[in-house]
Length: 196
Image (tube, rainbow, N blue to C red; front, side, top):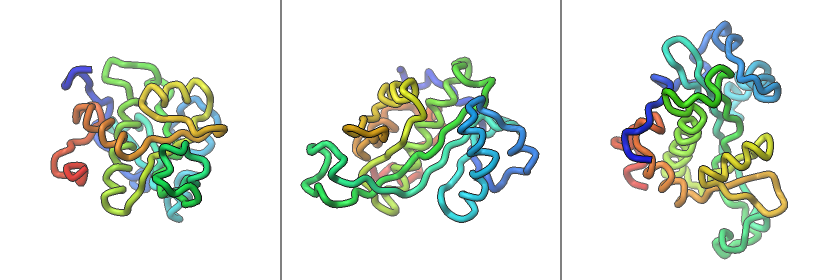
């Protein structure tokens, strides 16, 4: 993908806590599990500090959202090459817990893939957070095998014998830097990612 070839399908990312209840209730991804999380859990989880919920807005409409929170992966679950010589240690990670795109935008590429751009934004956020608070990995748990394959196409690796997938922060930095600013919806200049 050549630089400048992607455009992001939103104009800003805001915390979910900045939304009205009507806006929250007006969003649907078409996935019952994600929609249940969005409507019944996300605001509470955000308010009590379980995760941060970042919402992509296009005008007054929600294009999608993702969550991110600190987590760990036990070294024994990682491939030996990724254990950093610490097989019994809990490896600090950033969990992309949920990622959803509004139903009518799913699979559309005219303005750039909302899902790919949200993922890039979330990975970029994990990179920035790792500079401030540490971390070795970005992790996620895909809802199904189709999404698992999609995440693999974006550089995530599967843990042996587990649903969980991960991306080492070193790879995450390359993933973000290999995409242009428009694709991720973030400018790399002036952020902590300059030091990555």
